[in-house]
Amino acid sequence: MDFFILWAAAKLGKLPTNFKRLILGAFIGAGYAVMIFLPALNLLGTFLAKILCSLLIIIISYKPTGIRWFLKSAAYFYLVSFILGGAVLGSMYLFNSDPLVIETWNGIIVNTVSFEVFWLLAGLAMAIILGIWGASYIRKNLQQGPWLVKAEIELFNTLIEVDALVDTGNQLVDPISKEPVMVIEHKKMVNILPPELIKMLDNKNLPPLDKLINTLLGPQWATRIRLIPFTSLGNQNGMLLGIKPDLVRIRDGDKVCTNPAAIVAIYHRKLCPQGTYQALVHPDMLVSD
Image 1: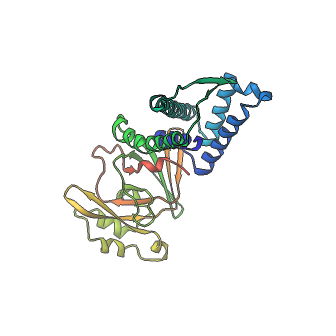
Image 2: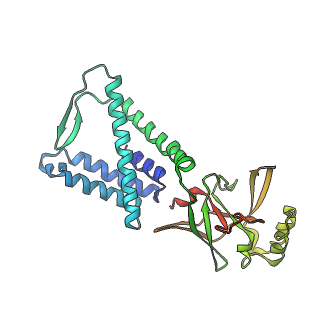
Image 3: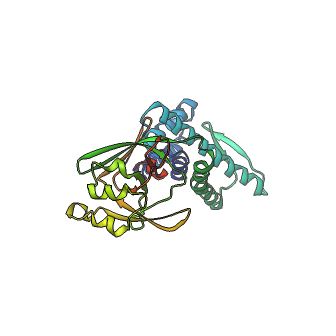
């Protein structure tokens, strides 16, 4: 259960983590839950011990890179914990016909009525629903104003830096690897792409895709070319030319997320008429492994 709480908090708050960190954090939480019942370790039931243990779990599970991200990680962890704990306890009280007796042991709430496996499975289901649909709802409905970040692309020992918008509606993925796709204006890639390709993309009318690919001949491009299908208004079966860079790095304040497997799709027009940003970042690129 600890693992799913940590996972749901990470999904809900877009917190950087990975499977190993979540497992380690859950292991510490489970170990604390066992040790707290030992009479010799009754100090673990104090308020200070609970806070310190939970903060340790947060640090290990999410590795916050600054005070802002630490506070954000703690807020989402406690929010999910309280929501799931209250939901499970409330459901037990609502649907259980037997008297529900609550006692405390070393400061920990103990349910003296037998805890059926059903309630554990219900809690896991709630965590999964909260992590998937809750995160999707926040991304689509509660994000206020443009979410701007710095994006860095490394390819052939060349570094490109652009201002990017985290586009919550961007669901582009590489159809083969299923990796997220970032869209970038072609003019920002002039130091990497062949001049003849840039010249083609300068035209208002996008040239046929096969002509674009023919400009990327050579062994250095053989394993980097991708075709990214997309749908837009008036273009139901579109296709973007994608490039596999060496690395994509996203900087959002103190948070830095590296995406070595991400794909960059080349767009032949301006993404923002005002020039505020030159790339669109997939929201999943804000979660680092």
